[in-house]
Each structure stands twice: as C-alpha cells, then as structure tokens.
Length: 221
Image (cartoon, rainbow, N blue to C red; front, side, top):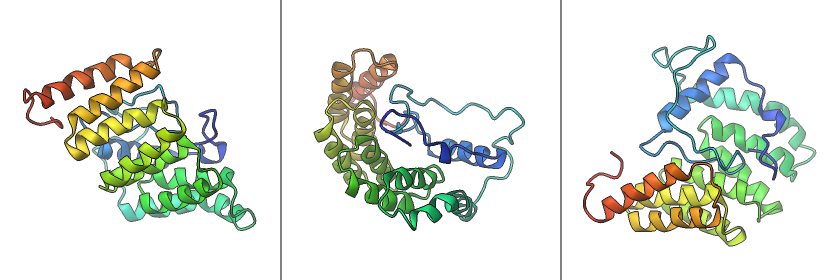
C-alpha cells in the first residue's frame, strides 16, 4: 500500500529472496476462483490472476512453506525500522500505512487492521486504506465487517474501482449474493469505462448471473 497516487512506500519494498517467496506462497494460499482481492493502494486496474510458477532462482511451491509463526517473525523484523520511527511520530499515516501493509502482506491481519485503523483516525476518507482494511476482515472470515467497510469507502468515492471489485467478490463468495455482486461489478464498469480488466469483470458478471438463475450450483467452482 502507499500514497494516494497508488505508489507503494519505498520502505516496504525491500525484499530478500526468502521474503519474496513467502509472499508468493501467501498469494497461492489466498487465491480463489476469482483470483485475489485487489489492493486499494496498489494499481486499481491490475486485477490479479492465478499465481505463476516461481522463477529467477526463487524456491518453488513444492519446497517447504513458512509457518504462520515464521511469517509473523518476518513481518515484525521487516517493520522494525518503521516501528522505531513510530515512537516519535505515533499518528503519522506515512508510517502507519506501510507498517500495516507489511503485516497485510504477511497474512497478519489483526496487526494490519490495528495500524490501518490508526491511519484512518487521521485520514478517514482514505479509500485505499479503508479498502485494504476491509480485505483484511474478509481474509479473517468476517465478510459482514468487510462489506461494511467497503460500503463506507464508497461513501467517500463511489467509483473506487478496487472497492467495487472486492465488494462484488465478498458479496458472492462470502454472502451467497450473486445479484449484489453483479450490481457492484456493473457499477464498476459504469463508473470506470476504461477499466483495464473489463473483460474479466464481464466474465464474473456472467458467472454470477448464471448462479443467480440456478444454472451454476457452486459459485466457487
């Protein structure tokens, strides 16, 4: 995550090969039939797709995967420099958001939510941050809170692409509401006519309509 221009904060972009592999594993674990939820502060037009095989010398998925405890230790280690600065700047979103992003990327959603909440106290209208916090709730198996936060994000920016995309995913996968998903995705296309992944969204709309009509029994299949 990062600033309002969608650029990741440089403090969060320094990765070792082990860290890069770890994040790839997280993506593989979290990916579903729809791909992955979009990062609010990332490129809102880059709908993630299925993870590709590791390359450039990185370990493959077949090798040992890090445990949640290892992930937590790695996240805290990476966040240490920012946490040290936070002691003298406790309400600075420029620190709070990158710290939250580190924990988000490591699957430490409770920690990420805590720092996102602190950032939103300073800037409650930051829809990128709120959208990412909402996805944390989704990954914590709390679709109701995720939807609440997505909807709050849309009160500030009704056309926020990643929020609308994610809202559709959560309504369908989390609440079994294909009609609600179609409404969110249709609004995404209506308000973002040049959306890069329009074809993918149209495919999801078609599948959700089939599910709503009873033509498709399992929305996650």
